Amino acid sequence: MSSPGSRRNSCRGAAAGSRASSDSVPPGRRRASSSCPYFSPGAQAEDFSVSLSQPMFAITLRFLLAVDLWLSKKLGVCACEESPWGGIRPLVRLVEFSGHVAPWLVGAVYTLLRGESVAEQELMLNLTLALILDLLLVRAVKTLVRRRTPVQNRSDILSAFFVERYSFPSGHASRATMCARFFLAQVADTASMRVLEVSWAVLVSLSRLLLARHYVTDVGFGLAMGYCQYSVVERLWVTWDSLQDLLFIRLRESLDRAYEGLWMIEWKH
Image 1 (cartoon, rainbow, N blue to C red):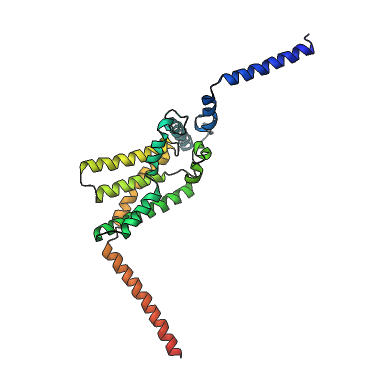
Image 2: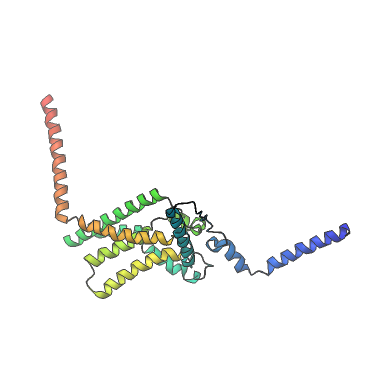
């Protein structure tokens, strides 16, 4: 039977050994495991267990979601600075920003107001309407589906101010695809320009996966959504003459109502 003194010494030795083992781990590795939850064990743990009593549709859906989660985690190699490709994270974030709605909307409105020709103003007018349409549709689908963003986006301090709460679908992917189709149909006149626009749309969509902003299905649905959005814009294309006629009709109706109001006041007096 061991004495109380020997038990205290053994406990002290175990505590010292645990501290020594923790000190032997490189600081960078400890920081990586704590500051990058996207790659930590159990960070993306979700319940995908299935039962044979469930319908085949539910089993298939759970399987596809599990594959989506696994593939998205494999592609998120720039999720944080300690990620495998963390060194190119600033460059990937720059590509990501090129697909943000703010610079596109500001640039389209500015060009619309400062356009030198009617054709240029008409082009920017429809681009502005297309961007607004994309913004509204993406917001509506996100509010309806309410799929939460990956874990990394909930812990990134900078992303807390720029990344939305819901991830499905990817607004960057839909916007990039729509803008690429828009310029391919309306502006691009050389093969090099077409390749550049398609490559930009692919890189913007890929950046959302590399930074772990979205799941693969989010980006895939966003690509399909943006492709279809341009078809709607092309079908509902607003010409500059029709816009002027519409504004003239609205102005004339307002003036007629104002004149009728003044005439009724004079008639009462």
